[in-house]
Image 1 (cartoon, rainbow, N blue to C red):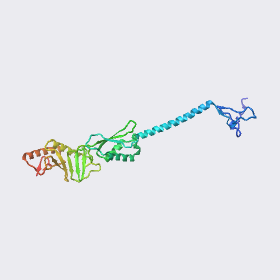
Image 2 (spheres, rainbow, N blue to C red):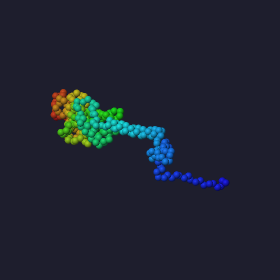
Image 3 (cartoon, one colour):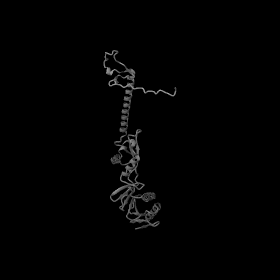
Image 4 (cartoon, one colour):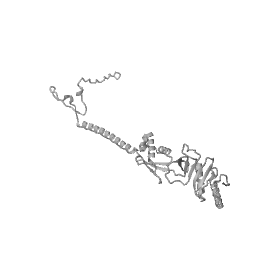
Length: 303
């Protein structure tokens, strides 16, 4: 008996005729119509009415769509407000050191605007690269030693603070005037009082591509020698002349009209001692020479 199983037939799917789809039973619908075969109910084609439960479900789904749309709109508004608050139009610039002169903030602003022109996205405070902006500002304005950035907690309201180089010497070369700091870097704007030492460069050599009119070693040599000579109180150094001669440096002291020739290859402290001893001897003898030559160690020549 188990060897012969009846083949199960597939259940036939009812085939609806045209126009019968409107009368198919659906869940959550109220059936309407007429109990009489001879009387047709009104709006028979639209006789499937929704129940209150289905209406509530559809209302909740519609409300969720509206809430999602409202959340997206509010998020877009918040993002727009955030971008507007972070957008940098004109950053405020201040000098972090008291000085005798007022910086030309307009020129610094032009540099910042040019930087933003090359990096438009960095106009938003939270995307601003302070290191790159500082490098550009110091390249165009060598008198700036440090540029610092400060901003509010959300990244906007950017403020730029400028720290300027302290000049050690005033360097005259040709028709131009530069201020030189202890690193040997030349710049044209001095934020502080005028240095007491003026250097006249008669070699005619312009500053190099980095803006330096002299090497750091040479500037350090001048600073040490000028400070040592002033320490002997034989007259304050008020002028340094660099003639075309190789390694020669001429000093002029207050109250003395003659130059003192020195050698940049010699030790500055030793030369300062030789200058002090020579000036003491000349004062004792009452000699007022045309010049004093101390380029040879422990020997003084005058005329």
